Every structure is written in structure tokens, then in C-alpha cells.
Length: 202
Image (cartoon, rainbow, N blue to C red; front, side):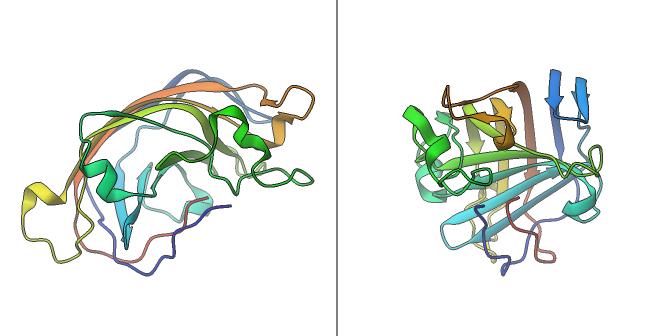
């Protein structure tokens, strides 16, 4: 799995956003419409990386539903605001017995943004995390990562996304694809505020 060290302070509190699917499939747990209805938004910068959390409630990740967005290159995204960025799996994501990088396929895993939908409240007994296998995210604004930033405009994050997610455990070696994928769309916006350390990307 890919993770950002949780050493920095994060934003906490209010924002606006939506995360929905007209048909979300999660093995042994969910096969219906889905609406996250997020009310907790956080950003955890570390050097030139950032993890953004869009979550329902402020409980620990392990008992919550939410969307985790891992930005590997903050500067590159900030230089191309308003441009759709491809989303891929992180290289480290692979089911047991499958070598890391196998799931990257032709799309590669070199996107500067990775997204995961964790359903650890709705599917608490299945420990379900669905990773974005394709799609795009467009940042209109992105916090610059400076914990001491005074300029409000540089502390603002706003994005929209349209992604396909799947469970790596449903990877079929014969076809080289993850089966039972679902489409998720949404948006989020919030200002950075310093708070407590966040948790790593699922």
C-alpha cells in the first residue's frame, strides 16, 4: 500500500462536497446506489505530497466511510489548475500473490493523483477499500502545502472528479483487469486549517 507519513498537521472542520455512485459494487457488502454525504474535510501536506480526506464524520478512518485523495506532486498540480488529471492505481496496491505493479497494466501507475474509497463503516466486517483504476480529477484550487500560509487563496482546495473504482482482490490475471468496477463522481472544497495529524492513505 502507499502511504504519506502522518507527521504534519492537517486541516479540520467544515467544507462542502459530494461523493455518489448510481451503482456501487463492493464484494459481500454493497450492490446499490451510494451517497457518502461527507461533512469532514482534511488536508495533510508532507513535503511536495498531500493527502486529502473527504469523510462522513470525524471518527478514525478504520471505522468510517470516506474518500482519500493522494497527491504525489502538489507543485505540478498547482501549475496546471483547471486541467483534468488522469487517476491511476498506486504501484504498491496488489492483492496477495500478485507482484506489485501488475495491476498498473497499460495505463501505468505514474499519475500524480491516486484515489481510494474506503467503506470501513458500511462494510466494517469486509474491510473494503475500492481503488480508482481510471478516470480524472480536476483541481480548480489546491492548498500550497505551507503550514504557515497566511494567504487565504493559497489555503483553498476545490476539485471535481469522475473515476472508476474497484477492489484489487477482484483482479483477474487471465484478463489483466479488475472485475466489478463502479463509477463514482463528486466534488469537494474547503480551506486549510491546522489541526491534528491525519492517517495514511489506505
